[in-house]
Length: 90
Image (cartoon, rainbow, N blue to C red; front, side, top):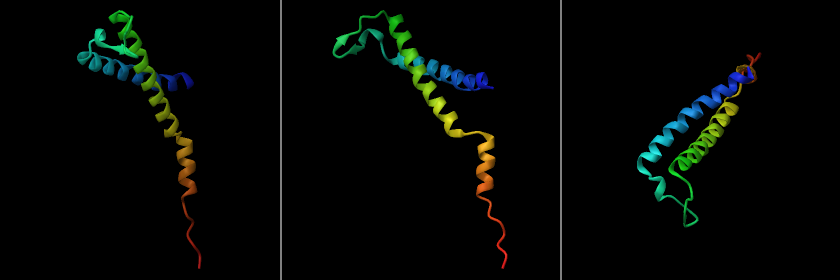
């Protein structure tokens, strides 16, 4: 089950990172990028690669946080039973 959860996180993160990569580099030229006012000493492929992994890391973290905050069905059932109020007898 744990491998399945990693796929729930990794695959959407990969797709999101791919989409972000396409959108960003549709408008940004890797040759125009600077790091601390210095031109990057990387080829365009190097910039694309580093940017993709940075985007993937951020989206992976966001997906992990979403899965963590979503909880499990068992937690949902437990929370639902905690909020049920028994009928008051008079």
